[in-house]
Image (cartoon, rainbow, N blue to C red; front, side):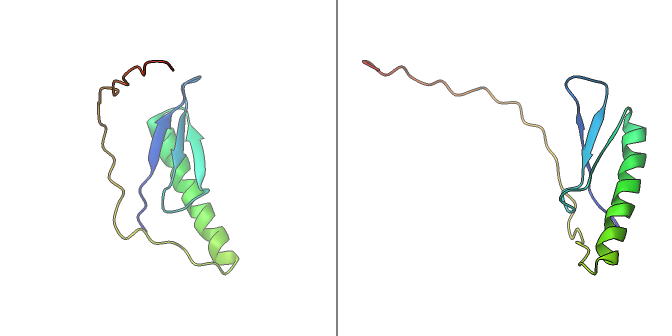
Length: 83
């Protein structure tokens, strides 16, 4: 099985939150990227196990998620006279 994971650094600490887009609700954390990925594997295994145990279908990720970063300038909003 193959799943894309998204690692998001926490603002208040040195943690990473990991989400699995194909498995909504499958979330974990780790202090380093390596730890976060290890915990993600454990979380995915447990999530899939729970789905199978409950007789629910296991989502399959047909195409991996593609993540891009865009740098944009915020739009300028004109002032409206009299408002």
